[in-house]
Amino acid sequence: MRSPTCAPPSRESSPAWTYPSSRAAPIRTSEPPVAESLRDRQKALVRQDIQRAALRLFAERGFDAVTTEEIAAAAGIGHSTYFRYVTSKEDLLLGTLRRAGAAIVENLQARPRSESPEEALCQASLRWSRAFVADEEALDHWRAAIRATPHLLDRVAVVGPFERAQLTKLLGERMDAHPDEDIRPGLLVHTLLAAAEFAFLRWLERDDPRGPTLHQLTEQALEGTRTQCWK
Image 1 (cartoon, helix red, strand yellow):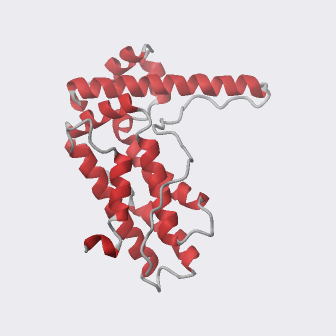
Image 2: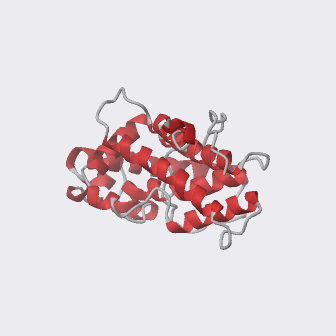
């Protein structure tokens, strides 16, 4: 099996923080597209305000001590409005991480077919790690909150079993190998994701704000899977 090169990522970008979808009534298709687009932007801004308010409160007081009423008040909305945008308080803290696997799968699907399987998965993971640190203020609050609530983090993997299976299938297609009969696609997925998750935990534990970013650590970890890095 070839070693992943993990070359510097391309200049692609994707949102760092995603928000729970609204449970409001569907938008009527008879409305002009411009009005619908404006409405979507307004909803996104409300979700962003809720997310930032929640992360700030979680960082200051701890996840368990903050109520949904307090989050709504901090975001400047009513309690009933809050529940039109948020599926659960836990999702405000863990939702972004839970969606990491789906983002990496989507990134892998978008990689050029000319790339090797190793390089494609490396770049898919690096695109996620780069986007994850785009909002520094929200990220600092999130890290402080999650470090104070380790029992929640223990229930979430950066990439869950379902997404791992999807990634294995996608790499199998690139390698022209059936994952049930060939160990290589699954082994490559588990090897590279183990490196990426190690980088995530290392980043989460650090206290030095001047230290390497999640993206930098992920790049180092993926590069470290190469055989020559152990010499």
